[in-house]
Amino acid sequence: MSTQHGVKRVAVIGAGQMGGGIAQIAAVAGFDTVVFDANADAIGRCEKTHDKLLARGVEKGRMTEGDAAAAKGRLTYASGFDAVAGADIAIEAVVEDAGVKREIFAKLAGVLTGDQILATNTSSISITEIGAATDCPERVIGMHFFYPVPVMKLVEVINGLATDKGVTARVIALSEAMGKVAVPANDRAGFVSNRVLMPMINEAFYAWMEGVAEPEHLDEIMKLGMNHPMGPLRLADFIGLDTCAHIMNVLADGLHAERYRPCPLLEQLVVAGRLGNKSGRGVYDYSG
Ligand code: CAA
View 1 (cartoon, rainbow, N blue to C red):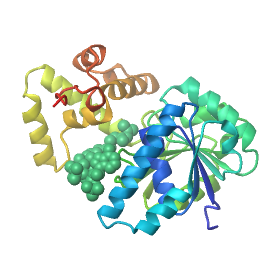
View 2: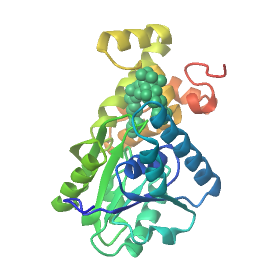
View 3: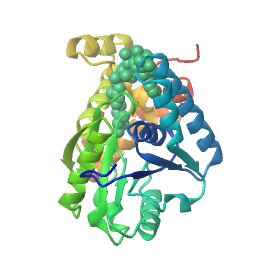
């Protein structure tokens, strides 16, 4: 396979939920895909999830058994960074920590020294800042997928200050080859998706805190009234309350505006360990 994107082999850095989802759709779309994670447990969980979701795709008639086996055959899992060499694009999906990402991109730039693309799935960290950690910021770009990756159609493609237009065109072509719709945005805190989504979620916490409505009623109003698949508080649980609070702080810092700080009630739930679906309780209780 060699088209406008020029990609045959994809390296995904990070075997968490986002990285695993990105690797899955890349392999299903026909790309040789390696998933790198230094944590062997994360790799094991990622491979199990791939087996489960590919089997589910067959069960649901979205692919044949042969397609699923071929996709699995294109996936490899590695806990050594050397596995990244030979990729035409690296898509990083590790923890949302600017320091960690800068370190990874400096390493990637040292291994992928040609015209390979260095993409990050960050949801809010500056692409320009990540690019500045390398000697090739023109090859660094944001490729923001949405959770759950196999289901959500969008890739928000974010250009840093130095991103080359040719790299943007290749990433748009690659996203489309992966079955997604790519939409470009520029590099301001939160880009478009989280600049607009997170203040809505934050406002829902304020409305709840002020007693405007109970969470169930608030969510029902937004779900049915706006035709959203889930209400904002349920969505906050789905994304993770810690992630929502973190992104609000990134918006406040990046846009120099205190009005973006997380709602005190959101912060309080995070401090209490109520992080949403992943911890069994957030706004709602998932223990049952
Ligand atoms: N992983 C993989 N597949 C999943 C999944 C997951 N975590 N959760 C649901 N699915 C799949 C289901 O398996 C199902 O597929 P099948 O055909 O195999 O059954 C399909 O999605 C639909 O699921 P359900 O029928 O169970 O439920 P639903 O129709 O209510 O859809 C939903 C579930 C797709 C999650 C839907 O509620 C939805 O779209 N919610 C909003 C999601 C959203 O806004 N995501 C973006 C979050 S923001 C973000 O990611 C970016 C950021 O920077 C924070």
